[in-house]
Image 1 (tube, helix red, strand yellow):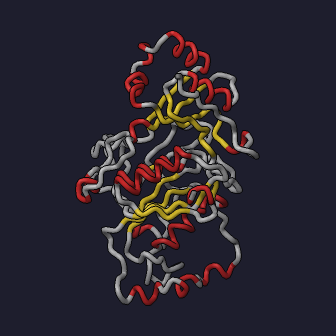
Image 2: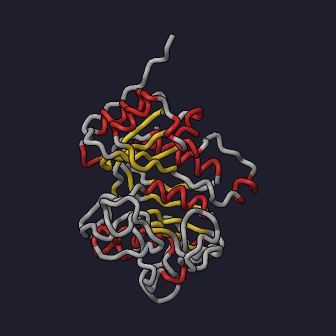
Image 3: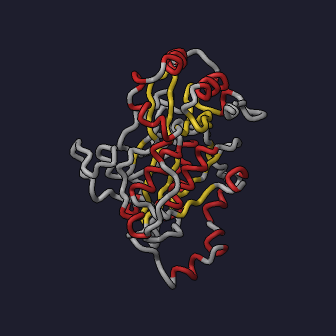
Length: 327
């Protein structure tokens, strides 16, 4: 008896503003992984479907070249085979539901989903927020009598980017010790000159391929969300400037997911921040902060979170308003 073929339908209430156009996140069946590397060997039926979709780029979510020392240290192998997780880009004039169901019909994929748009968490603009009431709430001042953090502890801010030269942030920015800026991928992680993190969104919101090694923010508004989060996490403390970061001496790793050309009032990330989550884990972050989320549940994104938590033993701080994450 043939297994029942999966069928995809958009969640109730979802519209085209809730996912990235013509991008599908896919978990490939293990027996078809090699086929993706050599599509010319596909059957006539599969080739016909892929040609109809006008499949462009197929990209793994992880280069597989990241730092594995953490896993070797803790001896905690992941049950998630990250090489099976791929992003398909297609160019055909086909709606997302039909495109996903055509992929299901090939028999190659375990599941497929839209790349749902993630949006920044709300930050109030009240002037009193600068008084940082939360330092007393979380007993930060008492904690600093015990420890002021350590420069070896790294908090990744996967967000809209950070002002790398901000006087209350710059001294605590993480530097990649294995990646001098010389035009070469010295640490072999797939990112050239990622000395201070990575900009996954790049200059143009409609170009998923123009990322670069400069995760610095370019304007105000929503672009400053990552800066605000970074300041709370580990702004330079005891320097008579700005606010006091809870992490004190801990370092800030930056990934940027707002494109330079997005308007200042934008709230949606131009690139999938889960790319930043994987990057941060593989680069050695101890904590990953994700102050953003989507309304719609994603098994693909859940698997990525499970992967970094189990395989790299990373503590992920997630926006608590996203109820599906806790299902």
